Length: 578
Image 1: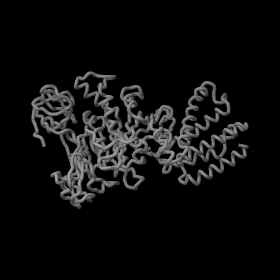
Image 2: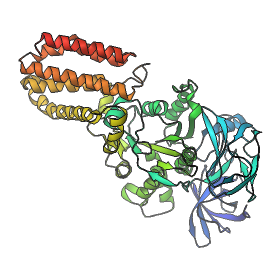
Image 3: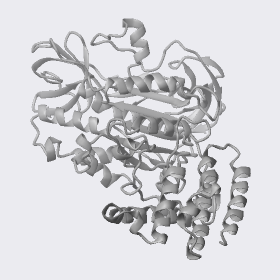
Image 4: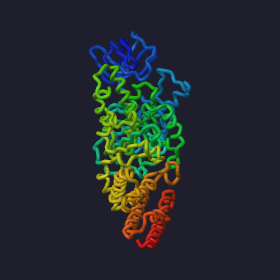
């Protein structure tokens, strides 16, 4: 470890402190004042060092001591991450609460991983094996998964010794002939992406079980999505649904600058959620990073880097990880506040000129990759955006939209109509649909894309017809156009609406989604034929099979029920001559 240098505070401006007498590197961690508050070097000007402090600086004054630790902000990576709740700089909040109560004093810290807990380690390499950086050398059961112990990326050599048994994270479980000790834990600087061999094409979908997302606006594994949401639009429930049902093995949830009551809801509901894949608590494959809006802005700025580094660690084991960043707007606001204290030239709406670059750096760290260990792993990032007043033209939303490939637009008008998930099908989009088309053809149905395009076209036609309806009323429309409105209504109410709290409707497999939309399309085709034979639309709309289609999403035996409904539909339309 490098020698620690000491200096003195010369200026304090909120969370930004200027020190003299130390000569650190950029992004070194510094301990400030008598309370030894953790900070990070963000600017070097001559012999002056500008530090952003991760805690409240009240009472800190010029002349107090500053210590340079000579190392950047790092996170501890190893068994024990899952089920943990951290703040933005990986301090375990439950541990601090046990020590201090609900109100934690400044300057208090604790290691990210418990030092006393023993883990059962089973090696996957033996003495004499040649190993290289990033390789898997053993396994440890952790939460709902098998934690794969990785060599640090810069280590290599032959295994000189390795042991099986129970070890703490700091214990040496083996040694290389190069003298490097093999431990369950490693440290990594959060601002540096972890290495990989190759980035792969995002051509496998992240299956969420949410019909509006999977059918209309799919996200690929290793993809990026933005989900803007105002108060009450269902952002938190949508995040929970993605955490619970998406086919990612690991979930990292970063609550970055959200209101305390929203973060409290997450912290109280997540531990109670059941993992549907294993029946165990969902927290057994989840890491929570809680950084509320009343916490210091500097730690908020660091929290997303902490989250993405932990996600990269599990990706390197070959797991599919989904990262929820809620919300990147609050992260950008933290950058704006720090930038203004540094007296930097502001960009649009006061945000720093490097806002777009920082957002790009963050989203660029996701992707589906070939890892150093050999297997494929992925990080899919869903960044929630909280535009002020629902204004999507503000800089954070616009810069995010330039980067991400999927946009799930939560709509307050849909919320008012009690339509959930409140994702607007006219303003949302996914650029992964063409890439994923072949996967859906091979794994679900040949005409998946045709069914999807038919649904999108019907909803688009409905939007165009609604403008005429508002002027002259629906009765003035021809029967064919009134039928389009009726079918679009069925798609909206039967297919797009989905209850997160219903035991069956909460999750819809891809095959079920395809069959359900195909059934609605079959109804539309029969209805068109009936209209051409001058059967009144009112008669078609009151057919019992239409109501049966609506109830279908709540039935757990959809295969049998769908066959029955389709057979009944054929008979009822046959009676109408169609």
